Amino acid sequence: MLICVPAAAASASTCPSSPASEPFAQWGDTNSYTLVSQGNFEGPLSQWTLSGGASTVAGSEPYGVTGAVGAFSLALPAGASAQSPFTCVTASDPTFRFFARNNTLLSTLAVAVVYKTLLGTLTVPLGAVALSGTWQPTLPMLTASVAAGLLSGGTAELALRFTALTGSSRIDDVFIDPRMR
Image 1 (cartoon, rainbow, N blue to C red):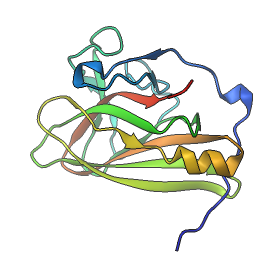
Image 2: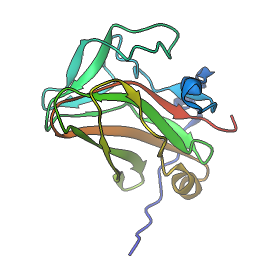
Image 3: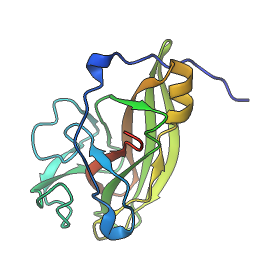
Image 4: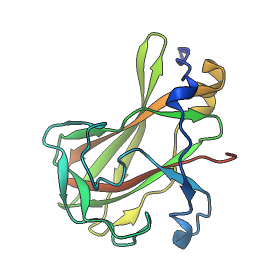
């Protein structure tokens, strides 16, 4: 049984426009994406919620998709989690992608979206990502923004949550696809 909880509408002041790029073009995805706030992990993560030993470490995805190869990424030891700051999404923000790799054999990373609703936050698990030993872009993952946008009158606030289930994982350069903007 599916229970619908209205999403809290985001105000215009919390919906800044961000520059878009095509960071996944070399992998055949020419959609435009915007970087999640502090999603390149190159500076302080004051807007992120980290737990279980999640922290920035030296080393970045080697492709330079943000314009230059970075110096840092986010390490998630087994059991650790990280949640991005809330960002505005509409029905035209259907997917997100990021770069990931494992630090140990058989690492898996659980990914969820968290929405602000009128009744508090609602977490929607998306599934687990099996990682390889080299930096790779993930496949596009759904934001569920279509339903949230419809329930909130068009705009909702979403955060992304990453949890290392087994083994140690690293993520870098987290992007949301702002189609049709």
